[in-house]
Image (cartoon, rainbow, N blue to C red):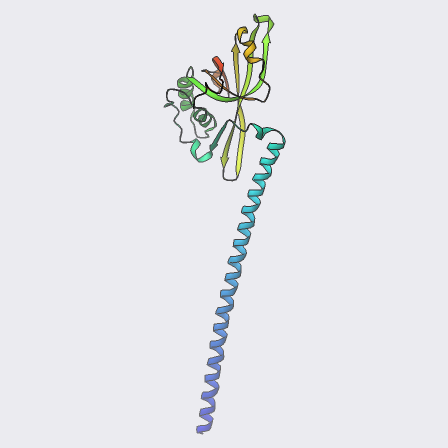
Length: 219
């Protein structure tokens, strides 16, 4: 009888040991699976980040091949900072970044935009711009018309949006010798006063324009 009880206790003990080992094994397997899954997710995230970087590098290379990167955008802003620029407090000279920020702000109300146009119109500027064309108008006593653009880029993470603001100017015929050396696509610095055309911030004119030499540009 005692032998039978001892045998039963031995079987029960063995069963408990096996169950404990199985439980421990299950925990180890679960932990291992969780670790491998975490590693796989890290690898996938790293692969995604590398792919995004490669995509951004490819876009930069494409811009370089097309000649865009030789000058680059005149204004570069991060999307998170665009909404922080005031529509009415513009300073003594209107900064190009400030102008682009207001122009591209998605949450600007019509009232704020109109107040900005009123405040900005006539303000002095000194901006880096790109030459589009310079031409004389024989029908208007040789008056010279300059067509410029101010390229800009708004960045958000690894993506970006780019466009440009169209700028026109009028030079006197006496400026021809200074302007004749300019080439389309060249980046120059221009000083003058701002005139916003037809209440549209993406089309402007610079009054009393002057193309600055390197030693004349504002540091």
